[in-house]
Image (cartoon, rainbow, N blue to C red; front, side, top):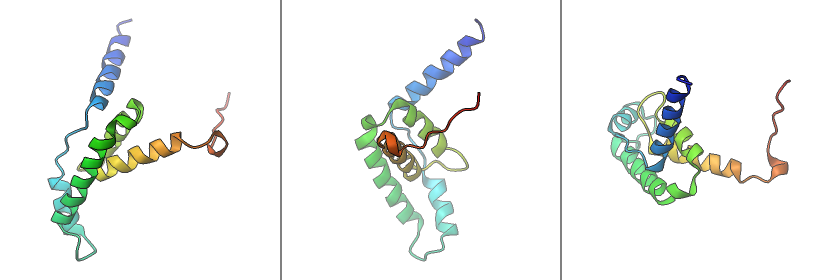
Length: 113
């Protein structure tokens, strides 16, 4: 019974985290993207512009996504470096599109018994 408490607390924390749009510091990621940019017009400022547009769209559409998708995508967008609203928005849109596929178009993975 004691082992279930941390799981319950962690689960409730993930749901609470998914209720509000996360606040990311995109500055470090945009500085790094500007340094590593292959295209000459890709600057830290253009990166920040893209991040601000993605954040605005996430804020506008946040209520349309499931709590599970929000939690999953927020975690993914924080992996491997600086968090990104562009990555968060892409993940959320892909998850929603996958959930909206007609049943016949979904890939069914059968579990081995």
